[in-house]
Image (cartoon, rainbow, N blue to C red; front, side):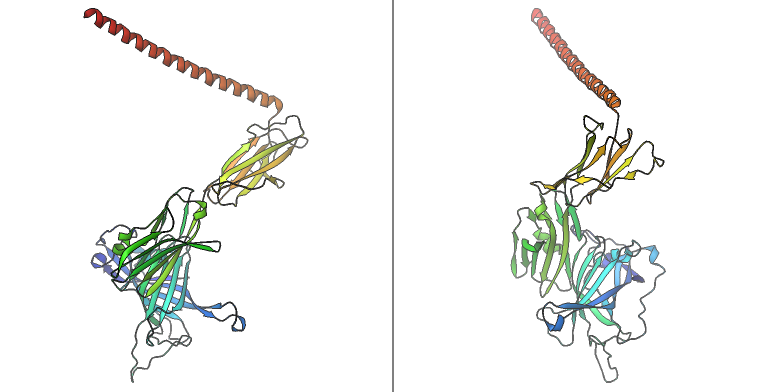
Length: 471
């Protein structure tokens, strides 16, 4: 569980960062009122330990902690008026409370964190110790925090350092028992955000042949540092580079595409700290986890964006008209083609006319599948069929195939009704009559068009003859 605490109001018209969540456009921050809020999250301190007997694979320990983002600007919301400033619990040297400020680094999507509880979204929070290159100070400790809203919300990777605290003869600093770090007067570990790599869309889906935009950006407390961006694709244990870009005051901007249909806007990297990647003509083989690794000066952090191909199945029932022919058994096929990914769910039901519960069809437990077929574009096809016995089947029974797939918003439902030979003959005659009518009507339209064109030609000829006589 987590809670949010209102602190005060701020006029963001004077702030140096862009308020808009869409940081791709160089817009100016609007002059509106924003709240400064404290966002309190249940979190975990994650530490790496040795494996069993100190050998082999490393294990990780997770200890409960509290993570407090202090005075974070979010858009004004009248629903926040009743909240107050975060009040830490009673002083406890064993408690893990990280009190974090971000006055020098923007936290995009903080309003998403703020409303996650109301939107019934969970926020995962993990903090672990971090050792940046070139930092060996005994008076500072570095941590990296990972915050992610479940269900495809904002994802943040924060690089933080502890704030200096001075111990005097009169003021002896108490230390947190586990980490050995000095505590504030209220028993919290004070830290400030120095670097942030984030994405506002950690989960993306697309169709085959579609275009994909992979959102990734960074914010830093320091300016004018060299930037190195690497995009990688990781899928089923295999990784490959997609795009790299190097830029900064000490290097010339160099972008290298390792994927034919990849593109990054080099100007936006420097001007808006936007390292997003665009991919076009997407294929099944392009699916996977895209890693956005951003090195800025001494700091390095990453985001992972999962891209999934989604193609809904085309479903049809065969036959269109169901009747018993020469044999005692008829097969009804539910054919599903051209879908991705592989998993698809099929349900069969039947509803005879004599059913005492016409609103509740009876499930058919015994049905059969063909083998999966994979096509050259990576999509799949599958058939599910039932066998209907003439001795037990009832004329007028409706058989229904219900297909569910992750690419379908709603299941596809198709049905066919068993008819008698006489009814099927009537249906056949009716179908032939309809087809004949359509054919004759088409012939009539063609003849009408032909006669109209001939009449227009005759009028033109007569007009020409009159003009010759006059001359």
